[in-house]
Length: 291
Ligand code: ADP
Image (cartoon, rainbow, N blue to C red; front, side, top):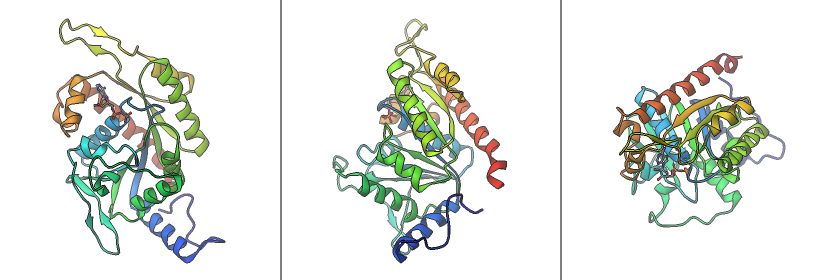
């Protein structure tokens, strides 16, 4: 299928090198059926946690999945998948293979290129754009059913680069916590996606209520229902909520995706229901992609 937004011809002012780079990017993207970006207005709302569990859940359903961590300054995906200290292996033509988290889940993150896990990357926009481009075009992703992109919080250089480099993103999944300050930032994500022409797949409310382990009653630490209300107001799909779940913290610290480590919990069922909604939303878009 021809990628939307691409032209094989050399553009005016484009050098031979730039043209070749663009062609490599297009070839990579042609082999990836669905591309999703996970975004949030704020840090710490569980965006990376959602990205890891979404990618793992899709892979467990038999899809071939790639997870691209474009959080250049605070890459967490490798740790959350137990891949700390891993390195990419060289492939042909100066390319690299992504790191495998399982048979059908591959990962790329700046974390695999740092000398030490504690190293800090101090780069400005253009350099970040360059590395994100390389993460797409110089990585042997192979054929993928889904690429899940985890971007840093906010609407800065990284999600902007992704939006520009992948002109046919299938959707943005927005993660927020229920309280008003977080919702306000989530609305900015919607504006951002709309300005870039990225369809919003829907909004997820994370850290939505906590079941007290002592009395079994629900405590609404960050309030509840704010994301669903915002989704209604913005006329966007609400994908579901994930409770505040202590096991989510321990499993991600231990490098084991929660929905794999604790599949029999209510929280894992909530996440799986969200994954099903996302799959369905993407599948419903399919006929339009073929036009
Ligand atoms: P972000 O990517 O938005 O900065 P993270 O996914 O890194 O956020 O999550 C921040 C912290 O919150 C992590 O320690 C993670 O384990 C924890 N966390 C995420 N979602 C939940 C949840 N539903 N319940 C409890 N802890 C969570």
